[in-house]
Amino acid sequence: MNLRARLCTTPAVWTAPVWVGIVVFYFFHALHLEDPYEEVIAGPLWAPDQVAQSLFYFYPFAYAITCALAIWEGGRLKRDGVWGLAPGRSRYRVAAHTLVPVMAAGWLILVLPVAMRLIETRLLPTPAALAPLLLGMGLVVAWAVIGCALGHFTPRLISAPLSAVVVYYLIVQTGQVEPVWLRHVSGAPDTVPDFGEQYKALTLLVPFLFTASVAVFVALWWLPAARAVRRRVCGAAGIGAVVVMALCAHAAAGWGYGNGPISGGHAAARCTGTAPRVCVAETGGAADRLDQVRGEIVRSFSELQQAGVNVTTPKTVSDNLLNGRHKKASSRSTWWLPLSQQAGKNGPGMIAIRYGVLLSSVRFPCTFPTSFEDGRSAAWVVNHDAALLWAATVIHADQPYLAWRRGEYGGIFQNSAQVLAKVEQRVRAARKLPAAQQTAWFHAEQTKACGLVQEGRR
Image (cartoon, rainbow, N blue to C red; front, side, top):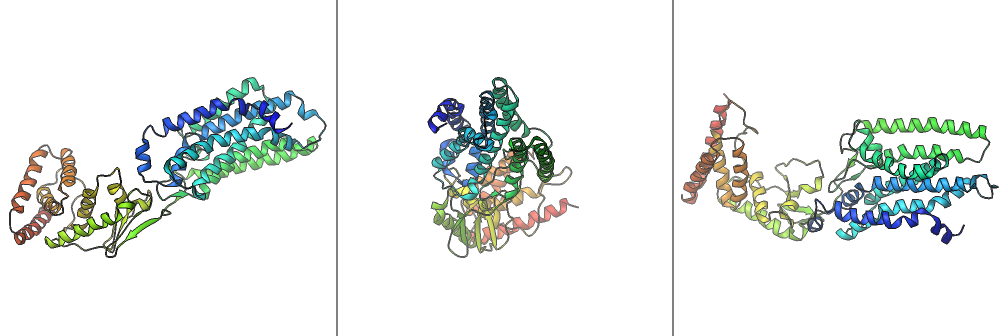
């Protein structure tokens, strides 16, 4: 059968308006339901993350449509008596020619949303970004083989639509049930990489081998050999498939929810200056404001030091977006701050950069509780917060600090408004003092806060 005749008879073509329409509609509906277009293109933009997000909704749909179309084509081959004809061509070649349009339909269901997302975000595809797409395309082939075999043994009028529902439900439900390994072998990766991350090979190899082993076992039924030989080969292949599936399940059993093997730190950074050297993610959404970000950081250091605050300038201030999901703790020489999040188009702006410098640079000669426990005194809060609020006013970052503490007080104190008013009153009085006395007052507040927290621990 020539190409034109095949395209005219294959259900992959005459059902195309339905599944292409669903893909386009669902892309704009589902992928922009929570993240509007403006927020998506504002960043951060990372190709592996965007590709994985765009595929998340379409893996089950691609496998379901592929299996249903393959069952229909497999049933047609049986109805037409193709397998009983003289073997002018191998069964594998006949099946491959029949399933090419079916597999093309499954591939298109996956390629369309990826292409639209990359065009939308103006990102270039990378091998790491296309890896989950290749996984899906490989599994489309596997489901086509499985479907074609099912079409040979089942009535296609019933099994084709039923299989579409069952396969879709099967893939979707594995992401909502126990044990956890089911979602990792389903072919719809449960793990979505964060910025700067990409899948490790095992994350994609496990689901591929799990389903592909079944497809290989099924394909061996078409082996052009004597029935006895075919049974022995299929028996060995069946045992092999069970072993492979068990190994895949065992490998995925140690992975948590949305926590398949991932490697981070792959995003490029853009840096400027020295002492401190400031770096932001190149596609994090704030790279065009890098000089302004560094200027705010340097200015904040200078203003705090001039006011008498003991600030140790780090060697590097880096964007913690570059760490992916596993954030690194700051040290004296290296700070990790959410620079892209703060200075990006959807961020609060430079005031948030100054606020980050405040929280990272102002140090007390003691440690404070990370939470308020019943029965312990919180008298130190007023002096502690007054000292920090004074430093915040020095670098014009008092608004975010007050907003944060106002929210914190509401869950701690019954008289939160009075506590905050007392803190602000002390700072207003201190700001009226001469510069030297303000410095002395700041250090005195620190000392008093440390003394009160020590008394509360006794």
